[in-house]
Image (cartoon, rainbow, N blue to C red; front, side, top):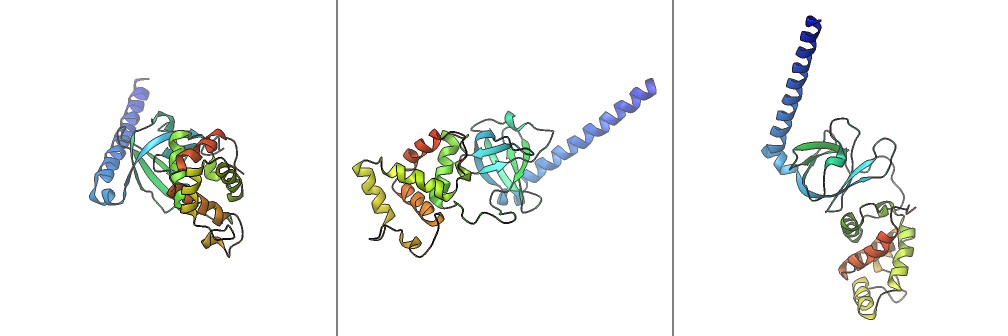
Length: 227
């Protein structure tokens, strides 16, 4: 029995030493000049569980990023809290990121939300106005799934929202949109589909300083699908 306990104690010591070495190495990497040049500061807005089968947790940042956490057993993403400072660093390859909670000194590996893997959808929402909406939603209603909205669905919500605008807000929106006499956005005149006008409308809402108001009906949609 004493030999067994000695072996077990020795194994635990080696495991502890290994984990300590990994932790020291991670701290050295995050503090190195090379890492400082490539890591980007951000702030945690929320940790969202969208119930995906393999990796259900997403780190939502105040800059509008939604970073899906890869499955692991060492750190519970739910222990990270709103307003904690983050460092978003490159991962081991182009499809991953290493996100550090600076206060807790913990790292999580996430998908790289700025790399398209495989064949993406034909139409996507990715303009500056839409990114501004995501940043607002991350703070106001992080459970929203508007990030996955199809352009056609979002265009319907945009049309209903415009119909509710008062005269001053509508004037600011029209000045920002600069549509043609046919009611089209100049950049979208020769293009089919909903992606271009939906993105252009979001950009106009941003320029007219209406993103905060537009987030109200978006948040009212709750966590329902935007398919």
